[in-house]
Length: 177
Image (cartoon, rainbow, N blue to C red; front, side):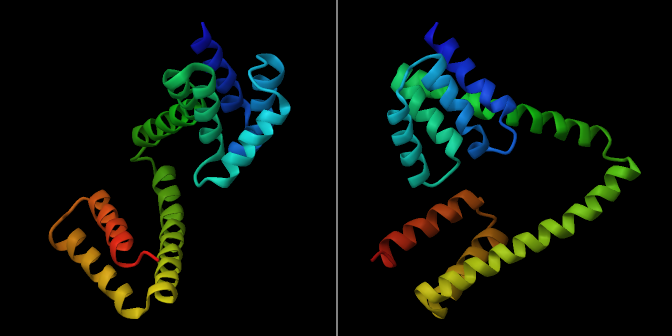
């Protein structure tokens, strides 16, 4: 029964917490502190501080930690699924809807409007990454990493996950402080 309670405690904030993780924090607090009394307000504040200190989405980090504290590994899995499940479900439904009407003139027009914006955002992100790497590592290391990545991705068709992992290993071995 504890897994059902964990699921409900994190599903409700996931459903009604419009605005992402930060918007759902008070809802999670209500469920965890007031309704189920798994934590005190002070303990919840510590979990919130820990979640803010770590990289990544706050809602899933808090769900994983609280779920683990209450129900072990399976509690963490249930809590994270309940937190991410509503968004995942809606994304799948919207993608199915867009795919169903992909030949519609309205959907094509929407794609023509959205794609340039995404391209500009990705270009800005790429420039920021390049600029950060240039200032941290110098031009030659930055060009080397970019060139090797381009060859791996385009010429040898290596999966991007392996290129990212290789970049992380390269950075840890050769660029670590």
